[in-house]
Length: 197
Image (tube, rainbow, N blue to C red):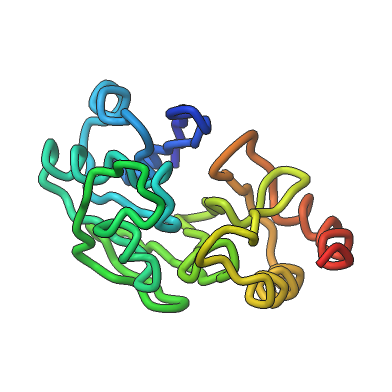
């Protein structure tokens, strides 16, 4: 698998193109992402949202219209796509395949696993494709996602962090902002963050 990335918009939100067996998965197409995606993809098959915040879904509709491909989004975050709850002017988009909880889907013959880690948003998820994880705004290099926004939940975030500590495997983590890291690199940091709730 190959992974391409580019930071989009004022929050430098990472948009990813993960290519497996010649099939491109577009993950979190943020602000003005379409031009970069068009220039760097050859066979897009799906748009995957780790969560519904505007800086991760801004170009959902534009990318979907250009390539005629479906959107997969955590079910609990679908309201962000259509209702623009923060009044950011986010172009509305429609989720074709709502993902509830932990769920594995087969897209163009490729297994894509959504792992639900609520807290940053109700549906916040990490997405595993092959031996790579896209952690959205749940886990960053040496940091975690905020849980003080509207629709965030500190108690849910605490439970999600505890669960993250128990993951029995290591793999690269490509975060929604900043540089890549790994599960093994971030698990030892979790007690530090849990003490600060």
